[in-house]
Amino acid sequence: MLTLLEDKIATPLGPLWVICDEAFHLRAVEWEEHSDRMVELLNIHYRRDGYQRIAANNPGGLSRKLQDYFDGDLSIIDTLPTATAGTPFQRDVWQALRTIPCGQVIHYSQLAETLGRAGAARAVGAANGANPVSIVVPCHRVIGRNGTLTGYAGGVQRKEWLLRHEGYLLL
Image 1 (cartoon, rainbow, N blue to C red):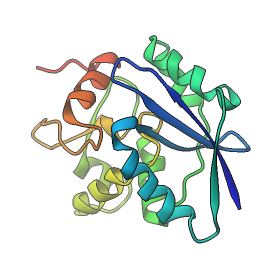
Image 2: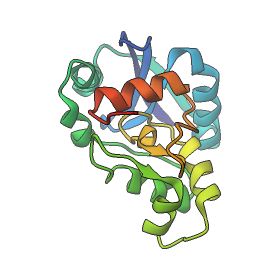
Image 3: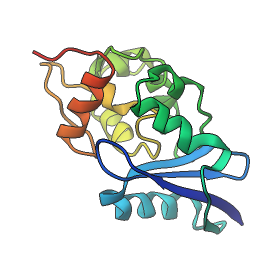
Image 4: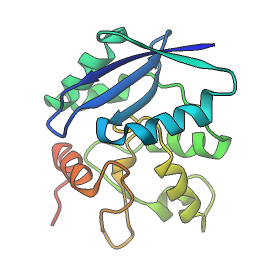
């Protein structure tokens, strides 16, 4: 059975769940108001083998490091370890998301091309939307081809805030 350590931190955008395994690899980072979505993803990925959630204060220092991100240490998220389930394609998308530099954005079709899957922008978008480790796996850095802020499960207002926080200037 997988033991997941969980904490909740206050952020400028609302309470944020921080969930990791006992090796302190992030398994989920999700806004409190989207707890149902987070539980659904945890069940999809871990219910078969079983898991338990245990409250922990700042497990592995991860909560503090995420707080540091919100306090302005933007590069800290590049150092945070993750361990995600998901399909091989989803994990490829999530790995590619971590290569998008802070302060920059990419279009869904560009991300698909990066993965050698030109024409798979919708599949990339679906994988992006299933990302269980928001912020750290920066799905907010993917925008529509026409520059619109689309497809962020945490809400477009949060996506805009995160992009401004990271130095991407919107028109």
